[in-house]
Length: 117
Image (cartoon, rainbow, N blue to C red; front, top):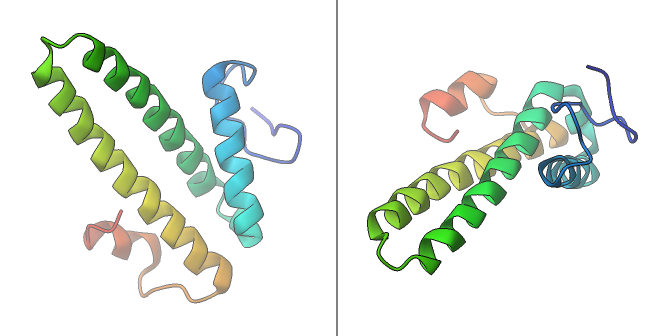
C-alpha cells in the first residue's frame, strides 16, 4: 500500500468509504497540527485507525441507546470508548512532543509502560 493524496499513510482497501473518510480527516488534522509527525508514519496511521474505531463505537452507542433494554451493551461500549479516547489522546500528546522536539525519556515505550498510551 502506498500513500493517498496529501501524503497520508494508506491503511484501508478503500478510502472512499465512511471509515476511510474519517481516517483521512483525522490524519490530515494531526499532520496539520504537528507537521513533524510525518516522520512517525506508523503512529500517525494508528491515530487515524483509532479515530475510525471511535466513530464506529459512537454509532454502536447510538443504536444501543435506541434499544432501551440494552444497558449492559451500552456500558461495555462506553468503557471501550473511554479506553480508545485515552489512547488517542496519548498518541496525540506523543506526536506533539515529537513535533516540538521535547520528547520524553524512553520515547514511545516509556509512554506505554507509564500507562499514558
